[in-house]
Length: 109
Image 1 (cartoon, helix red, strand yellow):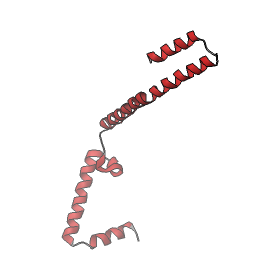
Image 2: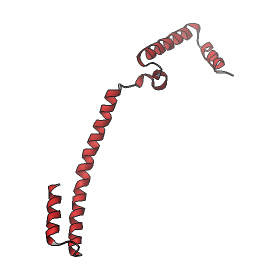
Image 3: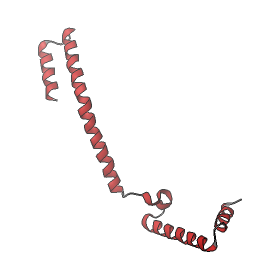
Image 4: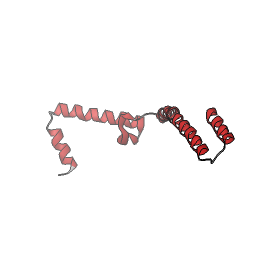
């Protein structure tokens, strides 16, 4: 059974007027879709968005995620580096002057 046989059985199951209306509606949809979107209409249908707006929306979402990462994670990083400076001073790897410079640098971030 080929696709044409399936289509023939499908169309013959409707009354002739309903089948005609169905085929005309399908032809109108295809004509409108091809006139707006070309061959991409077969791939994506009517849900295609303009490329510029979709890129802007993606970057807007990404920018808000980056801001959330900055506010959430850099505070934890600064605390960790402050503790690390204290540990390095306790182990006598750095001296008080170096620890003070590192703390001032962290405060400036």
